[in-house]
Image (cartoon, rainbow over all chains, first blue to last red; front, side, top):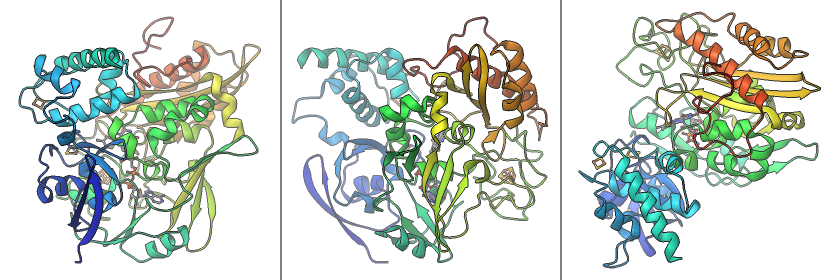
Amino acid sequence: MAKTHITTSINGEPVEFLCEPNQSLLEVLRNTLGLTGTKEGCGTGDCGACSVTVDGRLVCSCLVLAVEAEGAEIATIEGMAQGETLHPLQRKFLEMAALQCGICTPGVLISARALLEKNPNPTETEVRFGLAGNLCRCTGYDKIVRAVMEAAAEMRETV
Amino acid sequence: MNRFDYIRPGTVAEAVSAAAVPGSAYLAAGTNLLDLMKIGVARPERLVDLNYLPGLDAIEALPDGGVRIGARVRNADLAQDPGFRRRFPAVAEALLSGASGQLRNMATVGGNLLQRTRCPYFQDTASACNRRAPGSGCDARGGENRLHAVLGWSEACIATHPSDFCVPLVALGAVVEIAGPAGPREVPLADFHLLPGATPERESVLAPGELVTALRLPAEAAGFAAHARYVKLRERTSYAFAVVSAAAALRIEDGRIAAARLALGGVAAKPWRAEAAEAALVGAAPDAAAFQQAAEIALAEARPSGDNAFKIELARRIARRALRLAAAGTPERLPALPASPFAPLSGGLHG
Ligand SMILES: Cc1cc2nc3c(=O)[nH]c(=O)nc-3n(C[C@H](O)[C@H](O)[C@H](O)COP(=O)(O)OP(=O)(O)OC[C@H]3O[C@@H](n4cnc5c(N)ncnc54)[C@H](O)[C@@H]3O)c2cc1C
Ligand code: SF4
Ligand code: FES
Ligand code: FES
């Protein structure tokens, strides 16, 4: 089967790749492009470990075909820190130990950033509801929720 | 995932003729279809991608006061559209109670209507399933079936339709607009999904190649905006399919119910409109006795299809609760946990 040539942008950089129609965006990010920050938990939309944004919209990359990336702007965890400077969410996650094994963490961070872009001052329930699509088997969520609330407070002060 | 040809039509006419070839399937967001392809339940030879079709992504106010929603509109965009949300709050609440933020951002209106059952045996290619493999039997009978249907099921299949969105839509009289090889047609949503009977593999009235282009809500549906709710009981507070759910909408004039709508989710292979219960509510005072009676009527024909007799009583209670919440008035803002039955309710817990 002929591979399709895709031109896209990932974390602000132009990127081209070849893919089969039956490859997911997640597969191409990880296996073709070596961007292994985005994780595969389930492959079926349940866990959110594969969360990325496509044209600013938070999605599960395991259920997006790579061919759909043509002309899109994709943002992954690799673009979250600016050089050595961590994003406030990343910093709070470290400071407050909001991760254990770390498999869910890239997806949680990408989701949390998308949530705070829409709602910079969420209640605890809104954070929990907003992050419901990101499953974590280690932390019990409390530390994640607190870290997101604290990062949100800090981000509100700095704008 | 199996290999397939990938086709990206530029017009509805091209899409319809591409999908008329046997073995084709339409791809919307893929949150259900790609999932089923990964586990081998769906094996289309050709995917006809709808994501680039122009003209199917608008939410249009119609001159007569109704609304048309293009088949490609994303679930999150519809729920968050301020005009839509104000006029059809129960629909927005149902959408927000479904899946996760990621999935609602992706999932389309058309795909939500046509999503397949969550019956675990349907999803397991090693199990017998008349819906997936006609004539093979039904491993849900005598298996794990506590979440299966209590209305409209048949000996061949006891699965339910999992959509939340469809429940208020069917209550409010939505109409499905369809394009196909034989030209355009429209079908009321109430007649769109098929009960299993002897042919559970036929899930909707769509003929091969037919495409859902839009959904329409009639003007009168907006007349319920002040008293419209969706309530969904899940096995955890959010991010789960409905065990049972109900959409209730009332028009209250001079302390009496002037018009009523009631539909149930999670109980049958289609969103279940309870018209006899609606009729019984008209003219009554919006009180516990009327709601109790309506709930009894709505479930009058229900019978367990397995270990699920509890769903019948649960559905009665959820119907009553939805009616009581609707009577109390649509809240200014949707609750932070949409459709949660744990929302405070005046006058006792077990509405
Ligand atoms: C983890 C998870 C949790 C979920 N939880 C919920 C929930 O709580 N409540 C709920 O209601 N839903 C839930 N869903 C289901 C979700 O709503 C559906 O997967 C989604 O609505 C399907 O839309 P789609 O655009 O992705 O459709 P696709 O997956 O692209 O398509 C689904 C089916 O519809 C057909 N199709 C799509 N568009 C058209 C069209 N215009 N005309 C004709 N045929 C078409 C496709 O061929 C396919 O057969 C959940 C899904 C997942 C993965
Ligand atoms: S209930 Fe229906 S979908 Fe489930 S196994 Fe039986 S035939 Fe298949
Ligand atoms: S890997 Fe995509 S949701 Fe789990
Ligand atoms: S830290 Fe291990 S899954 Fe979340």
